[in-house]
Length: 97
Image (tube, rainbow, N blue to C red):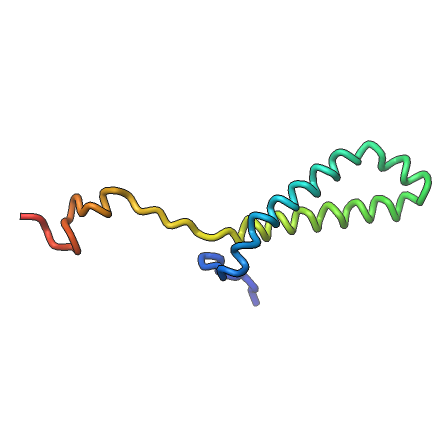
């Protein structure tokens, strides 16, 4: 059984949270990268299993937040000038004389 969800339409209430989620996830990943050199020091103080497990969990959650925000962005529908002005097939599908 597949749990694939169609992301072509996004609830407007959820879509408005997409860009703050992307921003927060990027900030979390920047902080993780900045603190990466200190991990061995923390591992010596608190134990390597705890520190590296917490860092992995933190990183995974930040990536999942980024993925959720990216997939929840509102769809921007672009219309070309040709479609708006009726060039080609004419207005409302009627050919031009």
